[in-house]
Image (tube, rainbow, N blue to C red; front, side):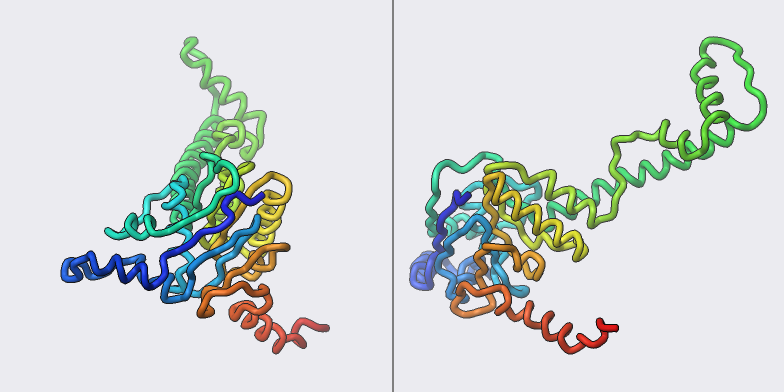
Length: 286
């Protein structure tokens, strides 16, 4: 499904007209003015999956943030907006097909990092609680226990549990079963699958960060299925070959000037991977 059909950025002339109204001595930077126009990026047209490819400083993250701000998309983590961000966004234009769901959002690397960090703190608490349960298990198996009053009944149940269960089962029974224990990559993947629903527009900024190649392939499949079967549209800034190779995706090369659509196999970063493995092809044989 395509909700956002096109998005236009101000050209150098329109930016220059705005600059004339600003006292340059007051500000060291007019960001995001001058970033995308320098790349010759004036407009984007979108498919169900559109990919913005480019190296560091290519402007792909700037483009995503401008689109998200202009469409007032939801985001989990605040970002540092310059003094001129709203002025720049006011000069942009876009075309929508139908109504955009209020659940549409942008997902950035900061969102994923904050989520995994929060989950890590939770898991650290789980680790401490697990150690306490280990000690509790050993204590409850040690020596006789005498029930003196009804207040000791809960303790008696734990003693009986410890004497009739293995340590691992006792720990599972007494540890919060709803806490997810996983690596940063698994947590990041869980974040994406948990945030992405149906019939929405999603902007993803370098979602491959923290993901292994296997998880990047899983995410690519998840995105393809979400676009094909669940009415989602994706605009993704990435340099991952696993995401760039998604079927039917439109790929813009922001390393090229002016920016233009390319096949994923033409991109400089992908060619570098190809040349690297091609030169070592014999090492994979035998």
